[in-house]
Image 1 (cartoon, chains in turn cyan, green):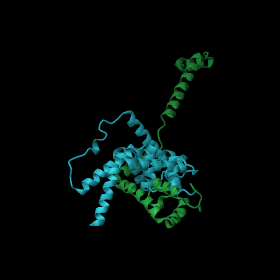
Image 2 (cartoon, helix red, strand yellow):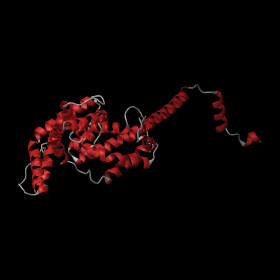
Image 3 (cartoon, helix red, strand yellow):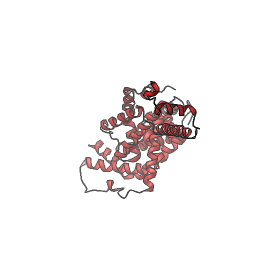
Image 4 (tube, chains in turn yellow, purple):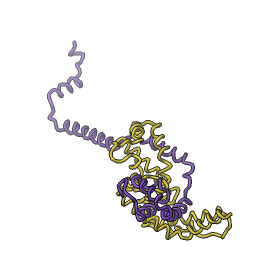
Length: 192
Length: 138
């Protein structure tokens, strides 16, 4: 299996700043995006991304191209760091949880409505079991193939399909009102 | 997962849409050909199934957002790469070397204390402190 990162990983391990920069530019946005979706917290997501790269610098000298691509390994590290943080959150519940999505004053402002809907989707995604959320993030948002996503989650492709189906079914139930609104908006736009 | 080339039924088409959404480009590569054939054979059923899946896709797409400016984070991470490549001072190795040095000094000092006085030492002392007088030379 050809690993597009192999060369840069080897050079970065030898202290090549350009190769390290290339790895960061290539993977940082996805690491941050993944962690943000998993944790729903921008600052924590940046901490996770930084921690992933600390592991990269530590492991790069020992890295040997094997069964999994370097990017797959990075995703596994990021997901495990997110799982750890989510576990710690469950152990110490946040008293402010949920305040961010509290309903404000009604407004006809379309942007405000969209933010409210997006907020509900974030909450529904956050309420999913973490592996279902990770599966949806990888396939829908990162547009990974089923094989790539299954490798990153360390499950079979059939198990991935099951995680996705269960996750999306839960979202459909939790977001019935948002989906109705979206259909209403689309119908309204089609009529006008 | 069905093998490539096998005919797809409604149940399988629905399962795929429920799992991967309405965009067939996200479906497993091994199923795409059969799914396209199913869509041509059963366009109404296929469209109804895809419409349901599209609703969830649209809801999910509401949360699409750019990760924003990552320049500060990038700088922090690259600085951590420089630190990781810098040779580090190993405190354990330094402690081990210091312990060896102290042990060596103690062995040397202890050995010296335990060794019997030698005649040669006496000669040296004698020659050092009993310097010849003018009469001896004279």
